[in-house]
Image 1 (spheres, rainbow, N blue to C red):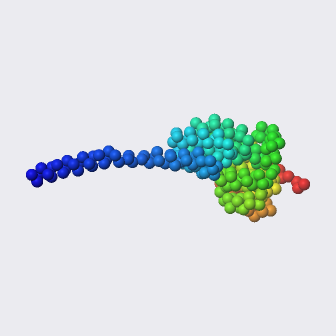
Image 2: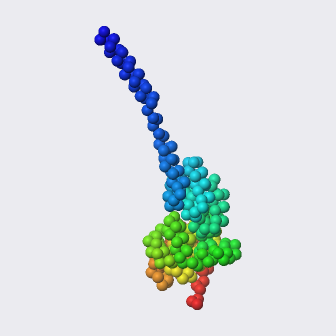
Image 3: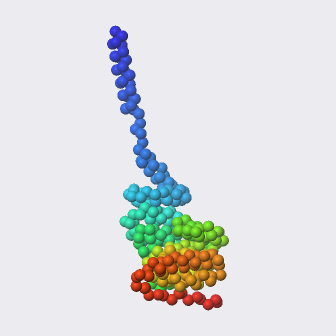
Length: 292
C-alpha cells in the first residue's frame, strides 16, 4: 500500500514539474535582446541618443544588420547623426558602402562631408583625399575654386571650431597635436581643422598633395598648420620633399622646428636606403612667400 502511495506521488510530482517547465518563459536570445536595446537608441527622438547608438555600429564589423542600420542613419534629418553613420561605415571596413559614402560628399553639412571623406580613405578610395586637399588649400585638385558657401565656411573661425570639435578632434588622427589642437579650438581658431587636413594628406598618393603640404609647411600663417604639414611630410616618406623639410629648421616656432627636424631625419634615412636604386627626379622646395 505504501509502495503504491509513493508511486502515485512520484507521478503527480513529475506531472506538475512537466507542466511548470512548459509554462516557464523561454530564455531570451542575447543577440535579440541587444538589438532591442540598440534599436531603442537608433530610433530615439533625442538626437544625442541616436548619435551615440549609431557610433556603436562601427564596432560591428561584418554584421549586415549593423550596416543596414548605418545606411538608414545616413538619411537622418540631423547632420550629427549622418556624420556618425558615415564614420561608422568606414570603421566597419565594408567596401560595399563606397557608393553611398561618395554620395554623402554632396551633403550640405561640412561635418558630414568630412566624415564621409575620412571613411572613404579608410576603405581605400582615394577620392576622400580630395576633401582634405580642398580644406588645406582652399581649392579643388582640378584647380577650380571652391564655391562661395564653402569659402565662407572655411573662413569662419566659429564654424570651423565647431566642425573641429566634431570632426578634427573626434576622428581625424591628430597624433601628438591633439592636446594643442583642442586648446586652440576653444579659442575659435581654424588651424586645428586645417592641421587635421594636412595630417590626412600624408598618405595621399597624388603628388599634388605633396606639393600642397610643402607649400603649407613653408607659408601657412598658422604655426600649428605648419607643424602638421611637416609631420605629414615625415609620414609621407617622399625624399623629394627633403629640401622642403630642411627649410623648416629655421622656422620661428620651436614646435615647427622640431617637426621639421623629424621630417629631415626620416627622409634622409629613406634616401640612404634607396641609394642603390636610380635617383628619382628632385623637386625644388616650395618658395617662401614674401611677407605682405
